Image (cartoon, rainbow, N blue to C red; front, top):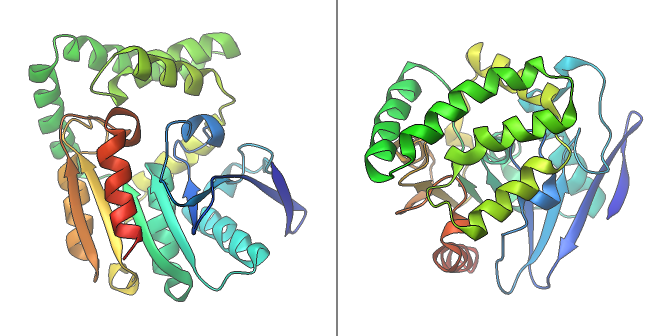
Length: 285
């Protein structure tokens, strides 16, 4: 784990995996443990820099509740770029990490070589809610335990905030996250067990939802994100509908859309061969 001074009394951290051209991986959540979040990701022929934004890993955990806005995550990525001494970054982000990737590509287009975003909403509005309802109905129809998992998630989420017991919070988070994968085999279960038992920053989640509810729209300046972009949606992502990702791809000047069928929120977990091949092809230009 490498830690660097990001200024203003802040530190940020990351770890490296593999060899080859560098890809900066930004985790979702927000607030989830980066190592656990990206435990399943592999991009052969590339070095992965698993970034820990503020409030995760060995990075500083800011006290103010408003220190986890999208602009703050953009600032973290820019601090990383400066510390690495690179003119341009190649970025990969899943979920909230994809939101931060899109926001950075819009704010600093001159510093982005290319970027990939997976299952990351650009806004959370009525259209998003309608799209989510539609895909959740398909999720229920496709999986015998689909309705049970969605109901368990709906019941568990408000209880997380009410509990002061970390073990109980982890148990409730695991129930909530069961809807994030289409399959529920040993591989998926082991991944979710690890992710939900790792350290979690819940304050950052509250700030994210408050900002989206206040009208945050990451496509307002989409035309500025001129770097080549691969936007991935997944057929049975009951959290971020694939149609939302297609809209992002259509809004980007150089966006390409890929939909991975039969999987949920983590395609690198449920369809690793297709996912790795798609990223390798795109990153090769």
